Length: 72
Picture 1: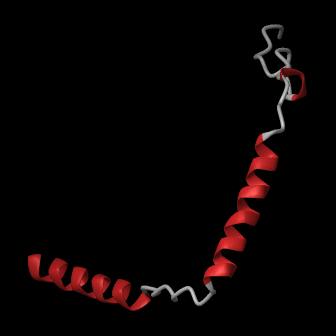
Picture 2: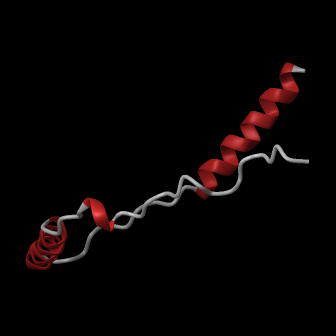
Picture 3: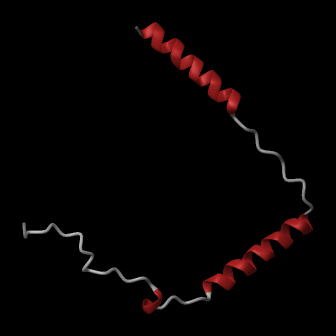
């Protein structure tokens, strides 16, 4: 039984190692990387300034009608 489990595990590990994707190196120049960072920062700070008021959130109705009926 242990030999069978060991073989199964060995096969699973081998398949997992074969499927591993190696990440590719970043070939952008330093200026391109910095420009992308600045663009990302500008996009996130723009979204953070938006305030969500309590009235804009959807309200749940407490009378959904899904309660069990008692009248037969």
